[in-house]
Image: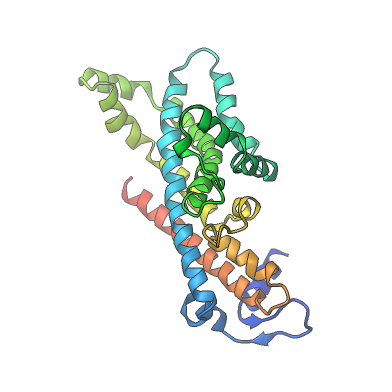
Length: 276
């Protein structure tokens, strides 16, 4: 079944079809060329979506590492109620889903609780009268924060597992050599956790590259296409333009995303091998 699906998708990427007519129109690599540069209507949209996807692929893993690692360090130092705190920190991940995205959408509306809270805290200059998702300048950064909110618990738990697996003799040796807490963290512990960092970065880059649910539910690419990413554009080509022969374009874009994911995986493996 899986082989059939892959083969069917590959063949579809070489054809023009709207999903209703009984026959395909074979076009070879024309779909790929149209997506990359040739079609004056679709190619600019794909390039803009690729740029936004790249921003998300950089920002979300960076935030996951920057916040998840310090949280893991703090949690590792807590001896009492550690399980409780670990559960609390992990809640954003296990509650992630369509319902949570709708809840975030409500919180970020113009007349919602977030704007109300900012105004009553004397931070009215930070509020958004048109909503955080309605302002082209804040829509994509806001979605990045929401994605990071779901990504940080996984990063924290992975780092916590790594910290608890560090051999105490290594830390004792660092202390004997006169290394302080910060020096031990940066020169001993952080290098030992490099494989975990690579895993966190890789997982979040993959989700940013292929995911689109949060963009579909919370903004549907708006305002004015400022949150359209490659995954959402592939969805739009396949289902929003259902009466047009764009299923082949959607399949071709999906294969381009698949190749990009393979290249990222190969790069990740190469980086890990070069540093071990």
